Image 1 (cartoon, rainbow, N blue to C red):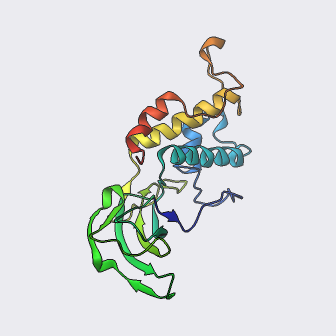
Image 2 (image 1 turned 60 degrees about the vertical axis):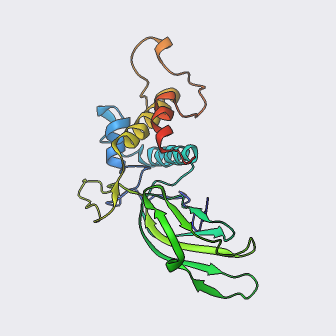
Image 3 (image 1 turned 90 degrees about the vertical axis):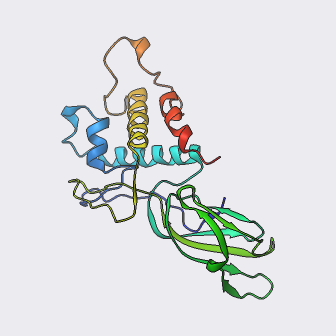
Length: 221
C-alpha cells in the first residue's frame, strides 16, 4: 500500500467551534449516541469524548488497513517498481496527478496518461508496465475517502461526487465508543442490569465482535 504524505495527529481540540470532528461524526452526534440524556447538554466531557472518538476511529482504520475520511488532494508516495498501486483512502473520486520521481536524475515526470486502468471504488491504480525501479518513487495526488458531516447543527453539505460514510460504519463507530464508555464507566454510562451483563472495567480497548463483524467487509486485504 502507498504511504500517506500526512498523518493526522489529534493533539488539541477547540471544542467551542461550530465544527468538531469527533472521529466519524460531529461531537454533537457522538454525544447523542454515547451519553445518557441527562449528560448531553454538559460540556465538561467534550474534550475527553472527542479524544475517545478520534481514538476509536483510528482503531477502526488500523483494523481495516485504510483511511476513512475524505481528503481533497491527498498525497500518497509509493515505490515505483510495481504494476499496481493501492491507495489507503478510498473510494477515489478523482486522480489529480501521478508523477514519477526518478532517483538517479532527480527529475519528475508526469505519468498520469500511462495508467492502464483504475478501480477507483477500491483505490487501485494499474499500469501496463512498471513505471520505475525500486529506488524511484511514484507520487499520486488524489481526492477520496468517505464524507461525513462534522457541523454541530448537521447543516453540512455533501460535496458533489463524494461518497457518504456508510450507515453500518457509523453504527460500528457508535457501538465501539459506547462499549468503551460503559466498560470503563467513563461518564457514568454503565448500562443498567446485572453485573454479568456489563463489560468488565478492566476490559482492554479491543474492538468488540459486533464491530469487527461490520468492519470485515471494509478491510483492505
